[in-house]
Image (cartoon, rainbow, N blue to C red; front, top):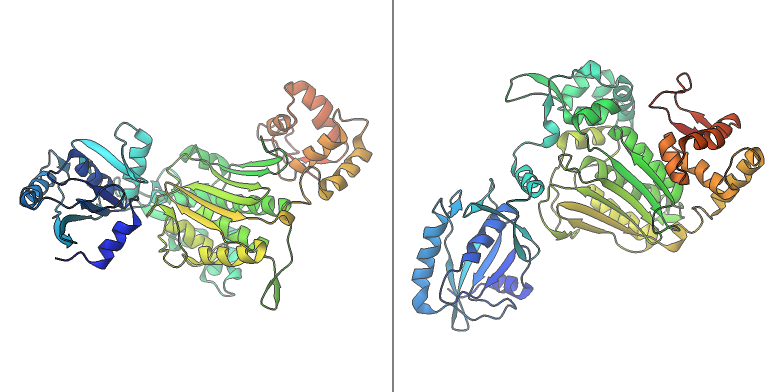
Length: 486
């Protein structure tokens, strides 16, 4: 058989996470089976025998072809070599008088082992991850037919959730349609319609799911079932070694969405942009898409900290991911996969997201309007989005910008003789408290080690001057006490 043009095109592309060349002119070498295993565990791939690493075609010796094919088929059907056994057959193709053996490896529905070892594909390499518990766990998670957020917790009931958040979601459905069915449903009915109440297949008991807890649970409930849950928002423009502002968000997804949006609006200028003949806020459109993606599509089984970082020339987000590919995504060929369907459904119903795949298209559109360039989306075990920025997007905000100058003047007049901080540091601290902060967070922000000194000379004068207030004023000594700018 003559080498088809599509296979020749693959060879011309060179080795990648789905393409592997093996010299193998006379024998099937051991590393071929490791590649089969890694392709099977990751995204599938194409193996060419008789082709050098650079892509030049050497060809397989004709008198060795039958033996090589037999050896390969025998090995991958041997449970001691490949488990579970794979049913693959090398195909012969001819190019310029030389014979190539081609093996197509599909994605396996289960984790594959080669000689008792587990291999995964990373760029052009086959990596033995057998002794890396974290990577093995992620691999098994990718192969699961069920979603991690569908994990059932029979110990909790609907009454344990925050009904104010469910009611908020009920009201937000008006953003999609005036007569949304949720508006006439009881709380439990809403949860059932969204697939947030399921039956545990192992115990047979019914209960609310992890998705329900992440969306509508109390902070303590969330941490009790997912201790690593956290989202980090960082503004790093002037103090590039650390940060200029930061919000560590450990709460439900609805409030997390609001805090991330507020953080982005606080640190990014709303540049004038036109969509045709209509003036639009491209900044707000971009924030909506990247924040909803960061929250709704992460792999919650992974402890990797999700983050949104604003720098001088870009915004980037990172979150753990159950990947279905590897490398930069192309808008024209991108095929979206649902990551957490029940969370995505709720986000769509309340107007925080649109249909699957639309977020990437919208982000492309509004990034070109906002910064004149294109965003980057990188698929992998960590999903990464990069939004390039114009200098004007961040030039007037931050510790030295006009916003802080105004705050600094205000607080200096009020407490210059009371708070043991310089006017600039006091202004920065006041701005830092635009969202509720704990005493510890405020103290670390000011780099002050002594708690007693910080309470006496910083927090108490700011409270007395009315610059900040307590979030739990009736319990001033509560361990959950936070402070927010008035």
